[in-house]
Length: 149
Image 1 (tube, rainbow, N blue to C red):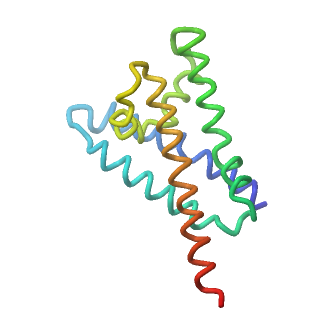
Image 2 (image 1 turned 45 degrees about the vertical axis):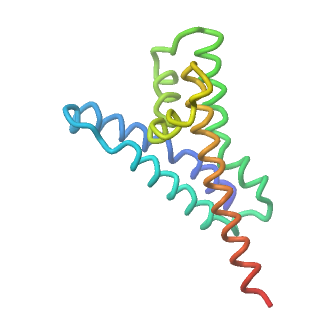
Image 3 (image 1 turned 30 degrees about the vertical axis):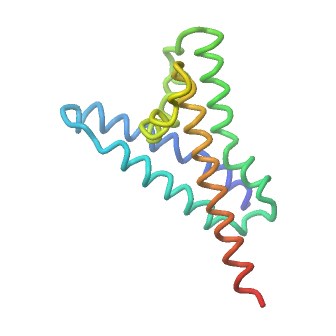
C-alpha cells in the first residue's frame, strides 16, 4: 500500500501543471506570475515529500524509482516528440508531457545555459525533482540516525 502511495505521489506534478496552466491562460492571462518563487516552493514541497515518505520503503533507490517513474516516462515521451518526431503531439499525451514539469521550467531554464534545445530544460527539471526528493530522504535519515543512541 505504501508503494502505491509513492507511485501516486509521483503523479502530483501533472494536476499541478494543469492547474498552473489554467491560471496562466485564464485568471492571470494579463499578469506575470512569480514563476521562480513557484518553482522554489515546488521544490521545497518535493523535499518535504521525500522527508515524509522516508519510512514508506527501506531503500532510497527503490523510493526514487517508484516516485519518479511517471516523471521518467514523461521525459522519454518528450525526447521522442522533440528529437524523433521534431514536434509535440497535438493530443492529450503531448500536452500532458509539457505540463508535468511546468512549475519548474523557470528555474530549470536558468540552469540550462549549456544547451540550446528546450528538452534540456525538461531534463534539468526532472533532475531537480529527483535531487529535492533525495535530499528530503537524506535529511530524514540523518535526523533518524542522530536521535538513536
